[in-house]
Image (cartoon, rainbow, N blue to C red; front, side, top):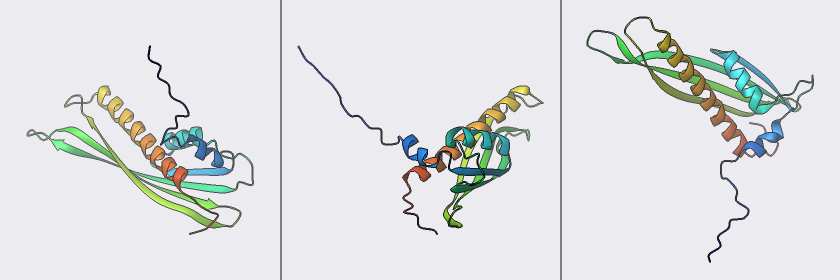
Length: 154
């Protein structure tokens, strides 16, 4: 008879607990391309402050670039890329100083479903954009969770 067991497993990338430090203490402002989608996702992950005196202020500005990445011999594009350049600025509202200023770029691709107008292409673009935005925001939250601030400003 063989017994195997594991105890006290901890995941290396379990940043959820570290992000809780910013829950309900942060005011989030989002502007730029697809700001509604990005704002909704960040709000769901960060649970920002609804009071008038937050400890932190996170300003997010997104810039989206869609371009054809594969062009066929007949001149039609069969694959597109979506690139997001998103700048995150985390400010300590009490000290009125910048804590973290980071720009994150992510890129995703989607295929055109046909050479003419296609709802399938629109759905592919939307899904690719949403996944790309969420990946970008998750990358920032990972950075935020492992950064030690020590209440020092930039």
